[in-house]
Image (tube, rainbow, N blue to C red):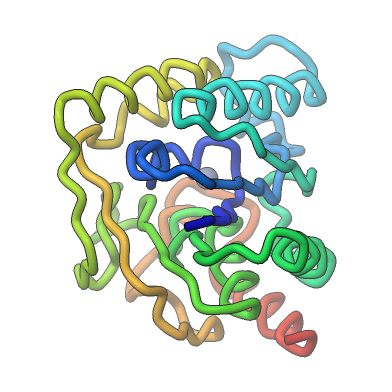
Length: 235
Ligand SMILES: [Zn+2]
């Protein structure tokens, strides 16, 4: 069974599905962004290199981590971090071309959950391209960070990782040197999946403030939905 995993950032695939992907034999990964926000506020202070070096570091980390899952086909589409929604048409075309090339049996992506505008735009792109399996990453629940749970708690498959899988996932996480602060917030021993529902991206993923609004991103949910609705015209 061949699987094409489409995520926004280098590390999303490991957070949501690292151990599960390691148990499969024919997995390909696409990162829509370079993981490097233009605004330096969103690059960890511990990283002292340039913006370009940060992007290079993030992609290199993912390539190294995914070797622990026996995945060597990792494709970086290079959209700037936090800007997927502004590039939906181009990115969808590129992902469609990869689907045409690889003809995967399964598409996998991230859920629409208001954690990060790029995760949501990634979910939207994949929804226009076919049926997918989705995984949660994070979202806000009553103002707090909630990791690896679907917004509506409707799980499909819950994978409880055994000791060996947890060890492998930890080794993957250790490769993401620039992301250690973020990764520390995720439970290591569980992954959740389900068939992606047909989302209405003109509606917010949940009531109340979205996680990226709480963080103070320049993008808010209302703007994201307006830009996303405009991009719907391509679907
Ligand atoms: Zn991400």
